[in-house]
Length: 284
Image (tube, rainbow, N blue to C red; front, side, top):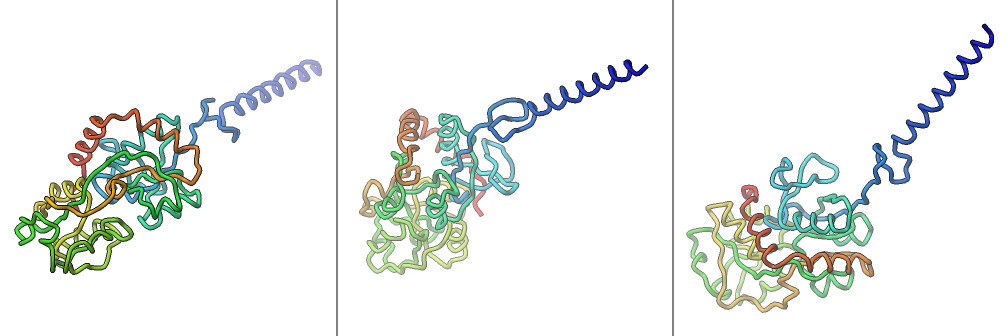
């Protein structure tokens, strides 16, 4: 009886040890292993406003390619998101969208809270003093968004807006070039585009300057808005009207991202933007 008891006790102890060993393999040991023994992907944190359609916006679900926004129940969609997906996939990393106010994007990047900025941001000289940029992944031109039926709807020259109350987003090239309109009533710059749309619809401003995709987006989503294109536009450099990925100074990501962007043809980029304009949520 004593021998039998010792034998059974030994078998029970061995079973417990075997089960414990199996459990260690199934749980995350903190060394990058998933619960199924698969290697976890590194995170690629991309910052954007998620409020600048068709480049980026916020939506309720994951329809039409929406990506979960870090820290809340909402999702991000748009041109920047689709390009970010391609970059993350090619890097072999998991894309995480970090919703960030426009003025907080560069500080978030330099402090390491995000790995890259993909937010319809132009690689202007002032920003290059603080961060690096990839090659351009979109190029556009400036347009004015006005109320349909207003006297400015038929404008063709930037000087047709002399005396008009015009604004643009804070700390952008668009706001700086407004001074090229003689006699313009330059209004206080605004933090984001939803605020500008509200100001335009309520008559607080006569128009706001943006990039062409946003102009198409706004005038398509809101039948009270019209987009004005110019025969004589603002004087601006190519970097002022281009969009690139913002990365930390000296980051090895620059060359990797440039190589990935080379693999996205102009035709595909146009298709992505056309889809973003079509899929954008209604203007608010």
